[in-house]
Each structure stands twice: as structure tokens, then as C-alpha cells.
Length: 418
Image (cartoon, rainbow, N blue to C red; front, side, top):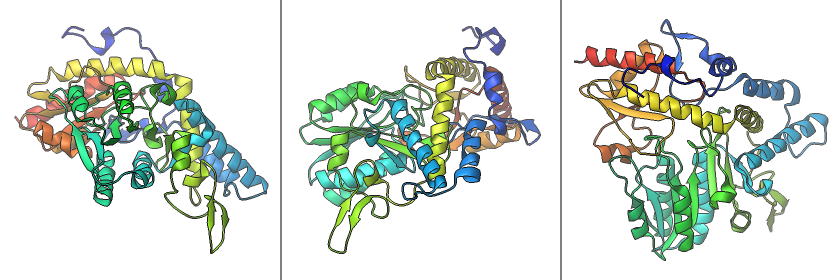
């Protein structure tokens, strides 16, 4: 694409984005007197009307607790809840619905694995490997586990393009490695990691592998059986679904051997003061009344994404990212943070003499929502020696015209502080 390229020069869009945008009510408003341009999708994505209507239907027609009632509303709610579990299973190609555990999000999923699998299986001197680009939710639980067990945390470094240094990963793998937990796509950099290679090499050392898929599932197809990962976690609110809901996939044999993480109702077969017998999978890990509406909404979000098509989404977003990258590099003093060869949906940057928070404030006055800060990835900021970055993150409802407006606003921000 030449430097003179504009949005109008691009080939025919891969998606009917204007039609898709009609499904997202929140996009059709003004912020500070300007049309809203929402570019904070890596933090949370917007919700199509189909998801909103699914939530509305549950609360207006089927609101009841699940698994415990014989009345009609409970049976309807239970059927919708379990149907959503099947949608998640199909979405990531798990082998069984028993392998799908509903959690509050990727964060809770990782904590569940750390506290159930980790505390049961790790001892002093065992090693856990994560990477330098991880979100805090894939750092802190493992630090806590190390404090509890005496295990040792090892870090895969990244290079100055924001790519994992796979050769260093190979060096720190050892017979002591028990857990490898890495992000599929970095929320701070957009880097797509070589998770298949990581899984294969870790398994050669008999380590189990957890993949944080919070940023991956909205942008690319995931097949957990093909990957052969041991656990995979993701959050619904980044996948155009409700907040406070997500899913943990785990291989059946691992989940069956793990103790419950929380105790309470619905995760039991029998309770007496002498002994409690736990429920079978997946309910052993779903104590108490779950986020029923959230699960149903997640199922509706998966239906929506499937109707658009993940292959088309990925291809369109790649074009959008390439266009935005080219245009951003024309802004004087702008430096990209994260220039990996394999990237998805995220443009993270700094501008000389302009603090990222000031960039965010000026863009907000232009109706543009981006994220500024450390993105819950402080070690990444430390690596690049910056306090924070400005991050524009894209979804399939964003347009090339919105990118042009973003670049114009960045030029304005630069001139204000020049």
C-alpha cells in the first residue's frame, strides 16, 4: 500500500461492515458532540442487539434458578444454559461438554487452575514458565502459587519487536517444568504467539500447558483438540458477550483428577456432616447460582460471531490493522510498541513529548475511545522503557474511515504539545 493510500483506495471490504454496525446500538451516538469511534475493543467489546435481546428474554420470560427446579421457568432456563455450554464446546472444538466450565472470565479460569491443579500437583523446586508479555492475570496467580508451594517462576523474554524469544523458552524448559502458561494474543502488543510450538515442546517435557485466549477468541478460530493444549481460558465480554462470564476448557482426565476450587450448592451429589460427595463434571467446578443470564448471553454472542464468520472477521481486521499501521507511521514522532511479524487487531504506540493519557483525553474530545496506560501488562512497559502506551484496538465493526479520523486526531494531539 503506498503512502498516498486512503480508505477509498482499498479493495472491496470483506464484510458488509455498515450492515454489521446496525446490530450494535451503542455505536450510534455522539460523544462530546462527535460521532463515537470505539477503539477500545481489547478492554471490552460492544454487544450486538442479538445478545441484548437474549439477556432481555431471560429476565422477562425465563428468570429462574437452574438445575434445581421442576417448574417450567427453571426447565427453560436450564435448557438455555446448557445449550450455551454446547455452543462453547463447538466454538473451540472441545471433545465434550464436560470439559467446559463456566467462570467469571479468563482471570477466574487461570486462578481456578492455579489453585486446584497447581496446589495439588506442584511442590518446592518445581518450575512454572510464563512470558514477559503476559497480562497480570497470567502472572499474579502463578506468583501466589509459588509462594504457596515453593515452586519457581521462569520467564520467557521478548525481543524489541514484542515477539517471544522461542530459543530462550527452549533453554529454560527442563524436567522441573510442570506448568507453561502463555497468552495466545497479547493484549498490550497484539502479538500472535506460536502456541502450537510451545504446547508441543512443553509436552515433550511432560508439562501441562494453559493458553490465555481472552484476546484470541474474538479474532481467530480456536481448536483446542488440534492445539492439544491442556487448558484454554477466555472471557465473554471481549467476545461481544456480557461481562462477568467466561469459559475454562480443560481435558477431561485433568479436570476429573482436580479437587473443587469452591464449595457450595450444585457442585455436590450428597452432603452430610461426615462427608461430601462432589458432582460429576462440569458441575464440580460450578458452585452456587451461576451467572445464568451471562451464560445465555455468551451463547448468543457465539451465535453472532459464527453468523459473521471468524475467517472473514480475521481477514477484514488484518486489512484494517495494516492500514492503521501504515497511517500511524506517517504521524511525526509516533513510535509503535509491538511490531511483531504476526499481529492481530491492536495498535499500541507512544508519541514524542505527549503523555499517553493526554493523547487519550484529546481523542476523547474528538469522540474517539482508546485505552491508555499499562494495560495490566507492567512488565511489557518495563521492557520498552515507557510508563504507558496509547492503544487502539479494532473489531469487525470498525471502519477505515474511523482509522482516518483517528490519525487526524493524533496529528492534532501532537501539534497541541509540540
